[in-house]
Image (cartoon, rainbow, N blue to C red; front, side, top):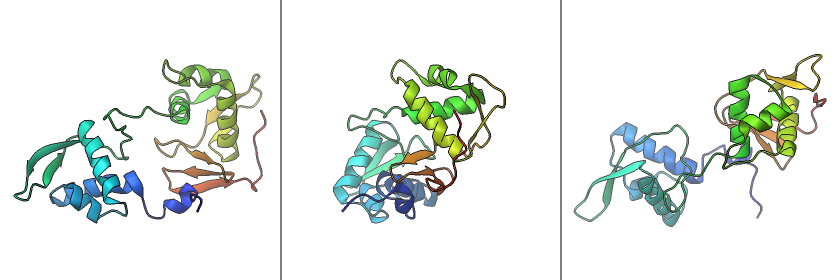
Length: 196
């Protein structure tokens, strides 16, 4: 069975998004945060939930505050985040993606050329290539996030629609999913307005 596009998965948060939501719900309700409680509110396998809770502890998001008489570890939320932290097995944080870097650069700069975007979004750890920036700009323009500045040569693009901190995702099924809005904002059968 092939994996569903994210817009179909997002009808009900799953995996680490759901586990993190469960942690935050337990905190908000004043209920004990335990692996068992997180598992009880999620749709994942106990092993997956346990692994994610362990990663959160290693990364400093969860802190042990005791244990029950039965030996169940109790946690408190030590560091909060609106979005589920992406944490490796060793507790290190997964760095932002190229698209996250580009989306952040677009927000900061407002108006950019493709070369500006490449320069601003690249870091020592992440190299944004020209082709990456061209592809992302093309898709964002199609979806109405960017508008070409009239008369600019080389082409300059202005951010005209900022929906939140998470970058719109270009999906293999030829559509764009906005995780901030939790909706598909463009499909390939829509007319493109990209020209550059």
